[in-house]
Image (cartoon, rainbow, N blue to C red):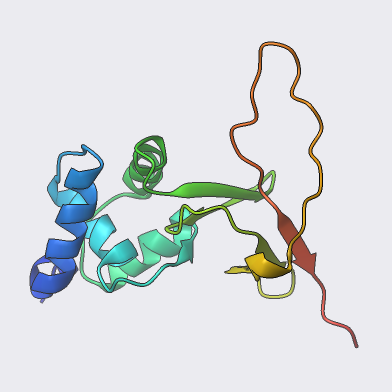
Length: 146
């Protein structure tokens, strides 16, 4: 028997609906399902499209991987998520949209928050004429020592 996470957990469903409507997004069934998995428990997380798709399948939800990608991009455009590009083949989506650095654990391929209070950026280069800096992403790649 299939279960839909968004309808099985009313508090998660309500939190997801509020998250979407506050950003001006219509709370469609698919958006609610994905939003419930992203923010339903109130915790921040870093996901890839593939990991969110797997969580959706595990919850009994029905959505295609293409829909997950498209929805994550829509959430980014609405300011609900930040996309953190680790390399040309992998992006993570962060539910915490405050400026903060990240650790990327090379052995496990996990992205986690790094302590913002320990980061000092003393100066950024000037943006080229006609441009402005919209965001600075700091990803600190970690390799375990042997």
